[in-house]
Length: 393
Image (cartoon, rainbow, N blue to C red):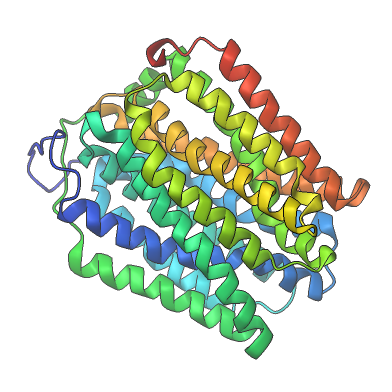
């Protein structure tokens, strides 16, 4: 199937803060704000009698939907263009978000809503990250992904705390209505302001996937990405339950940690483009691991401060680092396949992280899942040191 739009080339080496870059960042704020409200969803599930294992399964269905549909989304971006896939994904996100209002029981309907939600998010991520990757100047990738990550973290820093107040005042019903409004805002914004498409010379999807998967350095990036996301999934899916057991606000924890991470993404990520990325990654993994170890002690004010600073710093720099390391491996023609694989692996880590953490919490205790996450992050530092990241030295 041929694209209907003409073959045009938009220079990849352009000013960073142009109309398209600003559009994508506003869109990221709306959609990741919508997603951030669901970090409180385990509280809803627990209130309805779900075990930790079932909570892990329900939370894991969202990334499962993204992973299973991700190869299709990469192919659709190549064949239909980024705008159609973006709008389709945003529509599914809005529909799924609205359906949570009716999903009051843990049953097949809820499982279907979670999976549909993940499919919509898959389309959004495949199209938006491919689109923004095409438009980022090569020499400013670290700065660009640092800024994108800061915008996403701003949503994470503010929305869970807002969600806690919404639940306390009006219950989960209002929370689900508000997250739907954010999804709808992103859809309307994209209908009105999506930038002109970048159309690259056509290539077959099969050849693109074979090309990116044949690169050993890219496979190494994928391996360490899974380890980062494994630890991150533990925090994002279970910090609400951990904080509740310690009588601490999870919204405050995420808010402070995300604020620290925003600082690192805005001001430290710029140095990614100038220094050794491998050493940067090793150090960031170790900081991230120490932050995870300290999570069970956040009731103590000193421990809370140390944990949020270290966890926030590690999370803040690892996200743009891994994005840059992945994007560095491909040409513009390979970007749809490369970003499809990279974001798919990212989501796969959330599946395993959600489900494994839930099972470990039932078998042992909540604190042990954060110790496990720390061990995984430490393994990420070790493998980064061992792996031959050829292009990245």
